Amino acid sequence: MRVSTGPRVALAVVLVAGIGLAGAGTAAADSGIEWAPCPENAAVECGEVTVPIDWARPGKGTIDIAVARRKATDPDARIGTLLFLPGGPGGSGVNTVLAGGRLPADIAARFDIVGFDPRGTNRSHPVVCDAALVANPPEQVPDLGARLSEMTAYSKRLGRSCREHTGPLIDHVDTASVARDMDALRAALGERQVSLYGISYGTLTGQMYAERFPHRVRAMVLDSVFDHSLSTTRFLASEARAAEDGFGQFVAWCEQDASCALHGRDAAEVYAGLYEKALAGELHVPGDPTRPVGPLDLIGVAVNHLYGPHWAELAVLLDELDSQRPQVGAQVAPELTPMPLASFCGDHDFDFRSQREWTKAWRMMNREAPTVRGHFAWTLVTLCAEWPARTGNPQHRTDIDGGPTVLLMNAQYDPATPHEWATSVARQIDDSVLLTYDGWGHGVHNRSECTLGALNRYLIDGIAPAPDTHCAAVPPAQLTAAGSPPTTIGW
Image 1: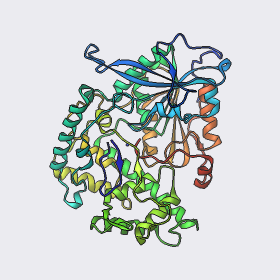
Image 2 (image 1 turned 120 degrees about the vertical axis):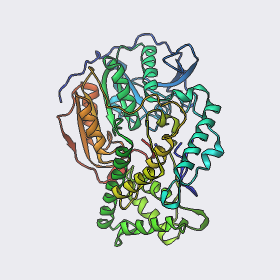
Image 3 (image 1 turned 45 degrees about the horizontal axis):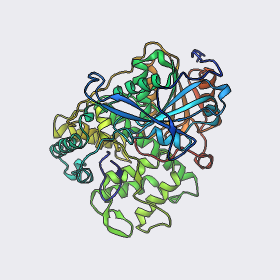
Image 4 (image 1 turned 90 degrees about the vertical axis):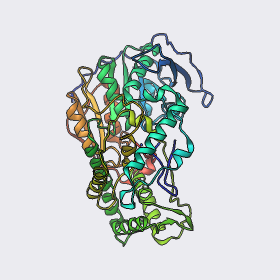
C-alpha cells in the first residue's frame, strides 16, 4: 500500500558507561537460520525465521520473517550482532542491509548487521487489501464537507478487505508481536544479547523489545524517537506543531538565502495562498488541470520536504504551483514511502465519538499549525479510530526495568517525530540519555562528526554522551553533499 500526493491525498497505507560488552573477537553460537547468499546481493546472507501468527496461541499457524545479515568486516574485532529496526511502519530492514545499511563503517566492522522485515510488511507476509478501496478514500477534510461517518464506514470496509486478502495475521501486526519475533530471531542467531539501532517507527519496536526482554539488550539507540504514550489529541497536536516549526525554519532560510526560488517573497504567504486555492478546488498540477492538488496533498508535499530537509526543492515546488509553470526536473506529486495502515492501527487505540469531536480535532491542528494547517497523521488517526482489526498494543508509557543505558537521538526540528516526543520518552526511560541535534530533518545519527562520534562511542565502547548533550546543526547544503538520510514520509 503506497501513499502518493496524486489527484487526491492517498490513503496512508508513515551518561555513564554501563553496557555489558561482549568480548572482542567473540563469535555467535551456531545459528538456527539456514543462510544463503541473497539473490540481490551475494555479499549479504538471507534467511527466514518461523514465528507464530499469534504468540498467545502458537499452535494457530505460523509465518516466516525475512532476515538479512552482513557479517562484521573485521571478524577479529567482532563485538556481536546489531539488529537494525526499520521505520515506517513498512520499512524494510532486509532492503537496508542489502543496500549497505544506514550505519557507519566503524559499526559495520565490529558488528554483524542484521535486518528483518517486520511481520505484515514486505517479504514477511505483507498485509494485502483491495487496491480499488485503497485508491478511492472519501473526502477527509472537514472544511470540504468531509463526514466522520463516511470515513468510519470506509475504514471498516477497508479493514474487512485486508482481513479477507491477508488472513488472521491482520489481528497480530502490532509492534509488541514484532518484539516477540525479534527475540525468536536473537535465539536463532545464537546470541545471548543483541545491540539495537531503531530509526523512527523502529524506535517503538526497540522500546517494546526492551520492555519485554531488557536483559537481552546489550545497547540500544533510538534515533528520531516515537512516543507511544500519547492520546489522540496530544498525538495530532504535537505532529501539527512539528510541521509548523519545521516549515518556519524553511521560511527563515528562504528569507536569508538568495538561492531559494522564493527569495524576496514571503514563503509563508505563498503557501497560505496555495492552501486557499486548494480548499477552493482551484489548485492543480502545473500543465495538467485534470490533476487537482487538494489541501492534504499540499500538506503532504510540505512535510515530505522537511524530512531531508530539502528546502531548495520545496521552494521550487511551491513556486511551480504558484506560477503554474512546470520547472525542469521538478516533481509536484512525488511518490512517498509506503505506510501499512494495519501495523499503525495495531499499535494505537484512537477514538472520535462524534462529527463535532472530529471537526474540533481538525480545527485544533489548524491552530497548532497556522501556516501548514495540519499533518499527514490526520488520515492515519482517523482511519485507525474505527479500524476493525484488533489493537494488540494500545498506547502506554514505556516501562523498561533493567537493561543498559539507552541512547536517544533527535533533531530539534523533526517534522515526523517531534523533539518533544524524545524528551517525553527520555523521562519515561529512567536509565537514558538524550542527544539533541540542533538542526533539521528526520534521522540524525549521521548528520555530523558529533552525532557519528556519539553513536560509535556508545555502540562500540559502551560510553553514552553526557546528559543534555547537543550537537551543532550542519547547514542543509553541506548535509546534502555529505549524504543525508533520504526523503521519506512516515515514521
